[in-house]
Length: 454
Image (tube, rainbow, N blue to C red; front, side, top):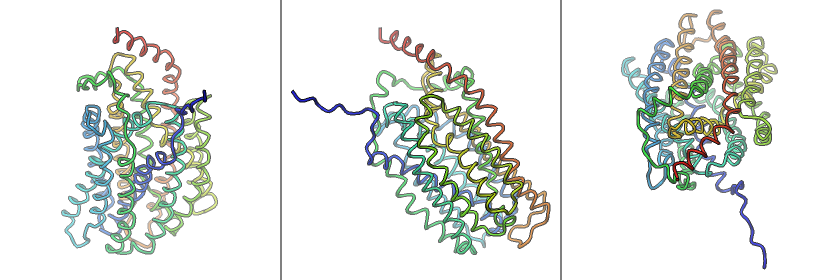
């Protein structure tokens, strides 16, 4: 008798792997493109930086409310397509609203422009991106049958692919921006170049990757609102994770890179060139699954934040020195990798803590607090950059800025991110105790499940 081939449970086909990463590629490009909203509003629409910062900050605060709704909706979804998968269509909505925002006519009154920017920005981040972020972890867990080894590999290797594509957008966008985005019409053409193909690419995951319904066998009860608040009270680790996420997105919300390279370096096109250095960091991710066999995701995050602290400090002293800025870009690029691509594993562990304490797992709702803090962090970042530039005397579109405005730009691109990284490091140390508790938590879960079956 011939021996049949045993299928390797840790193997993922190349087709499924590529299809799975499609939305990550699209979402990464979306975050890069929307990062230029502030400079578009100040320099093209001629809106004051304080007004722009206030609008974006107000939108992000509203965004925090939608996280609770999104978590509740996703955790209670049981459709023919699965739990998280149906909400993948939101990537199309995000790109459509991005187009609408950058198509804002210059000739509109300041009041109309303000309302339009607020509404489209709110739809991008408070509605569509919130649902995308909330559905991501439940979809991931069910697409790969809750296998943490597979999820780690797919996330790490996929992170390399997504990062390469993101670097390509980071490099090409500011270069094209320097030549095309000199008028309202130029901005429209530039955004269309990225939005249309990326919206198509972004929906491929939904089309080709199904959820495994067996993950929910025997656990199909609806999540109640009171259980969400019980989780917030009992699970202190979701608050540590939320603070890490908040500090991280505060850095992204400030997004002073375009200002820094326009007015400190003197050439915004070099922003993309410097970010190419981030590609050097990508091979590091290949070793994440191997490292995690002997260590933990939290150790990886801690190492990354230490490198990020050093990188941001280096930026402050580098000024317009391109080699030093490249070295800093390498350090800060590595700092972002673990938290960006290994979130599903953290969510699985937080859900284990929930289940061990007699709560539903709530993979969608686990992200409510971190989502709220992420939005608040992003809002604070948008508000900080707007307030600092306004106080420092920044004039949108001016060829030369005051010394105060230049210092505000330098601090926004280096010192404030460095302080955020220090905050991330502190709360990463607090999360490490969760990893030590996992064996005990999983014993409790197994005991509870056997009692439920008896």
